[in-house]
Length: 350
Image (tube, rainbow, N blue to C red; front, side):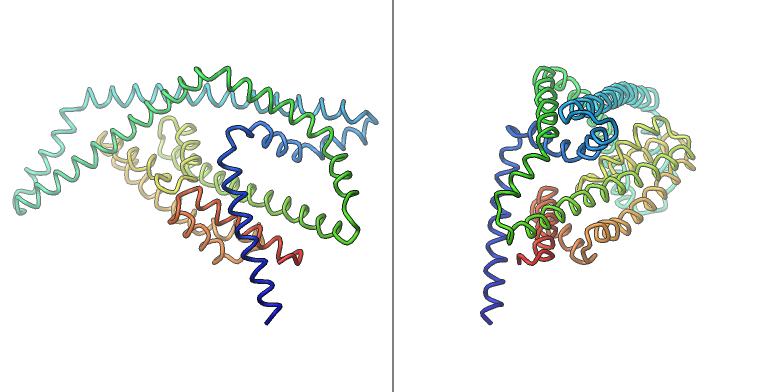
């Protein structure tokens, strides 16, 4: 009984400390972002740095400098190409949507008039309700698409106004990554040397398990996004959808959002093709939407649970409760709560 109460006390203490750290971390992330990214990048770059030191017998600071510069050169190049491509295609997409609505406004309105003509035998109130709902749904979907395009453009313009701040963040992140990469091994050894032998193995196991599970968590969601992107890209190429790459990237990003999801891309796109009288593409896009959504719901718990070593029900519960409680931030809170609890349980802290 005493052992059970002790474990319960430790569990409650863990939940309280975890909650406070989570709130503190995300409330101060605006001030600590370059240094958080620097630590994460430094951990990621440890193996290449050690490889260069061992292979070419060079000093630690030189190896860290080479790896950091190459890493940031690749990241900045990819971001520049991605932003340029997304911006140009978003602007073109917005122009085409506006052009289509302007040229085909009569056909769009005529579509609803034809509904009333063809289905006069139905109750007029039913026809009126259907017409209003379809008109409202189409209008909202088209407006959503246009608003998203405008929002993407406005965000890009805001990004341009914040270029000095962005450059400062990139510069501080680069410098902190270099220094953390150079000093990480030495700092880790100093911390371990300060600890008594009895605590050393336990701390080492905690760090090892945390690194392993967090890496697996990020890798699992990267895999899920990649699967959604590839499924969407293949489907859009089959149905010859314009801007297939741009829309597939957006679907991958939207796939992480709990409210909008990939439906924010698929549904307006299907409506546009339906109004363009390309019924095969419209139906195909809706079928593809259903397939991708079902596959996403099936693979997410399995991939996340297998990569983290958790039961699928625990992952499902964390995702559902978190989303219900506080959206995407609540989902992250619950998932990492389960992850860190599992880590401390493995190393026999809880």
